[in-house]
Image 1 (tube, each protein chain N blue to C red):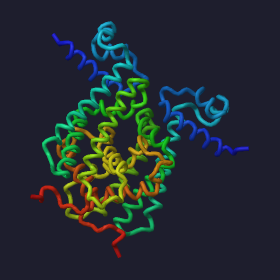
Image 2 (cartoon, rainbow over the protein chains, first blue to last red; image 1 turned 90 degrees about the vertical axis):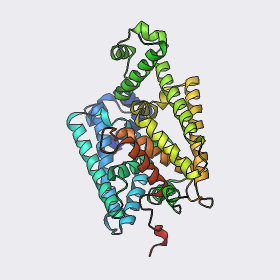
Image 3 (cartoon, rainbow over the protein chains, first blue to last red; image 1 turned 120 degrees about the vertical axis):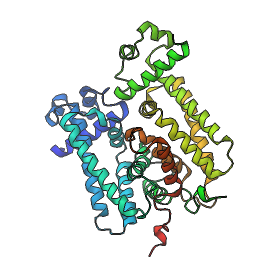
Image 4 (cartoon, rainbow over the protein chains, first blue to last red; image 1 turned 180 degrees about the vertical axis):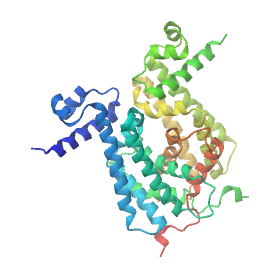
Length: 199
Length: 199
C-alpha cells in the first residue's frame, strides 16, 4: 500500500511526464487517470484539477531546487567554488527531472493569479540567489557583461539540456555538470587573448 | 495592394505570434483568420491548414538562419572570428524573430512525417555548421569538453533569450550578442586559473 504522500508523488511525476510529452492544454484528467492507474475520483481526492497539478509540479520543483542550491553552497566560502557548486547542483537536479524541466520551461504561463504569483516568487528568489553567487565570483572591475545577461546565459546553457541531452548517452550527468561549469567560468578558449587584442 | 508573397509573409508572421502566445494546439484557423484579418477561404488559398503554416514558419526560419550564418562567416578565415560572427548572426536573427524562436523551441515535435524530416534535416545541417566552426576555434589539445556539449551549451545560451530578453530593455541586441560571444569564448572569469590548479 502506498501512503498518501507516495500516491501524490506518483500522481505528480506521471502528470509531469504526460504534460512534457503532450503539453498541458492537450491533456485531460481522463488521460492522467489512464496514465496513473488512478480513478478520476481518486485523483480529485488529491487535487482540485489539472491547474492545481501543474501548480504543485512547478511549486515543488522550484522549492526543491532552491533549498538544494542553498544547501549545496552553504558550507563553501570560496566564490568560484560556490558558483561551481550551484551549477553542479542545478544540472544534477534537472538531469534527474527532465520532464519537470520541460514543464517549467513550456508551461510557465499556463498558471495564473495567485498560483502564478507563488511560483514566480520562488523563481525570482532562485534567480536572485544565482545573481548573488555570480556577483561574488566575478572579477570586481569586470562589468563588461551585464549581470542579468550572465545569469540567464547560464540558465540557458543548463536548462536547454531538456531539448538534446540523453542521460543514457556518452556523457553522464556528472561530467555534463563539470563541463558546463568549466565552459561558463573559463570559456571555450580560455588560453586565448580576446580577438580585439589580436594582430 | 499586397502581393502574394507579402500576404503569405503577413500570414506567417501573425501565425508565429499567435502560436508563440497561445501554443500551436490551442490555436484554430478561425483564431488566425481573426488575427490576420484574412478570410478562412483567403488563408486556405495560401496553405492547406495549420500544420502547413507551422511547417512553413519552421522551414523558412531554419533556411534563413542557415543561409545567413554561412554568409556571415564566408569571408572570414580566423577561426575565433568565425565563431564570433556565427554567434552575432544567430543572436541578431533571433532577437528580431522572438516569436518564431519560441515556436521553433516549443513546437519542434508538433510536426510529423515528411515535414518533420525536412525541418530536422535543416536543423541538423545548422548544428553541423556550428560543430565545424567550434572544431576549428578550439585549442587542438583541448578535448576536456565534449563537442556536442559545447555546441548545445552555446545554443542554450542563445536560444533561452526568448524566455527573458526584452529587445527594448537596457541591453540592445548588438551588445547582447557581443556579451554572449565573450562569455562563451572567454568565460565569466577569464583571468582565473582553473580551480584544479588552485591551493
